[in-house]
Amino acid sequence: MEASSQIDVARPTSPPRSNIPGNLSKLAHLEEFDISQGNLDPPAPNNAKEILAALDASLKAAEEYLGGVSESAAMGHWRLTSKGKEVLNIPRVGLLRTIMLNHWYHHRGQLSVYLRLLEVPVPVIYGRSADENPFA
View 1: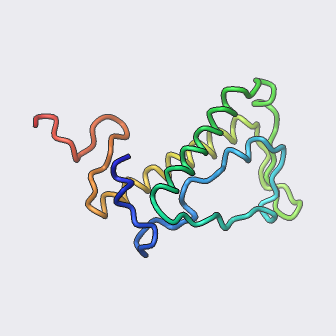
View 2: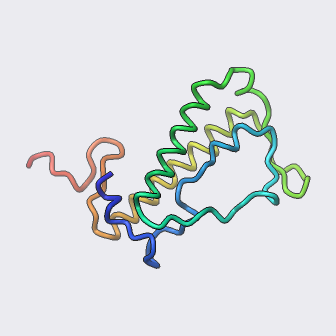
């Protein structure tokens, strides 16, 4: 993404570091995740190159997991707990679709808004963006 070179991770107007794509795909490997035990303070990137490297690693891990998960594992239940109390119990496929993938889409939308605020041309997400002139 060419626009990534214009992201300044140190600026106060930069997206919050906790919103940078992380290793959510690790959750799918677990049977249960206790949010009270989770590290909710992700490492802070120093530059756009580190952000893109983290995104690439996360996407690769997700592709490998999705490519190898069996149907029985996908339909097995996944639990979210907090201090041992169950908060959510859903089939793993529900975790993958409604939480993980939708979470990525949400942050992709946040990033496009952030780029727009910086007056950086927004890259193609679904077809042409408003920054492209199809008649030029």
